[in-house]
Length: 137
Image (cartoon, rainbow, N blue to C red):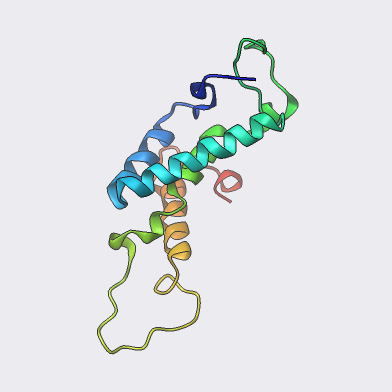
């Protein structure tokens, strides 16, 4: 059934706002837009599969499934909007010309490791209060 996309919005919080600001600081707008689309696309799939309830003319706004009670929109938003920050020039180490580049997966060679490391620091150190170890996993 049709619904307003705003029904999928993340939980408004300091964490969701600051995560978006960090992404906007680190990467190009097109990448930020991609990360936001990732959130909404995944939320729409979850709504379609009945994993979360959305507000619509067909669903009572107060009705929530057991899955919805446990679904952490705030943490999911933070994960989505930070998932590609490792491509940032600011997080990419400079390798001197002529130096061999290791094939080992490290922050120097792998944008996923760089981004994951920075995102983990964001949720465990930059936020007040920080995400719990369970949420920051």
